Image (cartoon, rainbow, N blue to C red; front, side, top):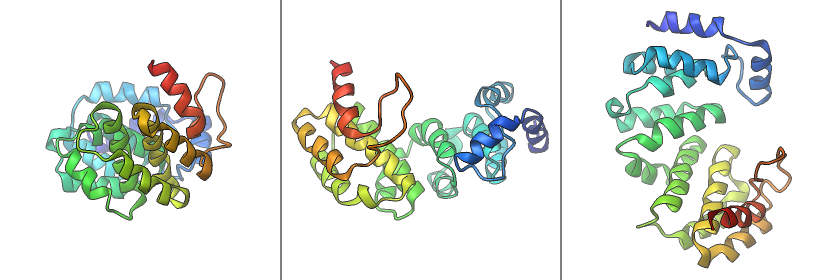
Length: 221
């Protein structure tokens, strides 16, 4: 499939309601409004196509970027190429797919995490804190949860929204998976008040740390 064919197919799948929803969420005008399930169907037809994925990403089109994250070959992607992709982000939902399907799977993710934790770019920081939160849950060896709490306490309240979101999930991960630091994590969350009033549908756990930590710790037991 060529990039022109892929874009044409995505455009044909565009939905007016989805475009409006995406726009309201900050997607911008470069989008067709394709439902995510339909993007996955296109990806199943394409399978892996690294060159196509890179070209789709460079279009800056929201739907093309979703598709790119599903058909890219992570093992052919250099650390510097991934760094450029992360820094080119403009929308959090594209960021979440890139982080989930590409960044977390990349063989150099830990080196990139270290680089991005020192960055001032909010999208790099979003990726870094996403990787950090994942490690805090799965394998915290070599991490300093107390030091991370110090940084979260100092920076999260004033962080750019892109970085604040995953920094908050690192705070929650510390509170849930590192019981000795739970009370401090709860206190930081309460004092900063980040996502205190976040709208949450029935059945979902609020991202407000003082609510999320006890609930997720209970589920973990």
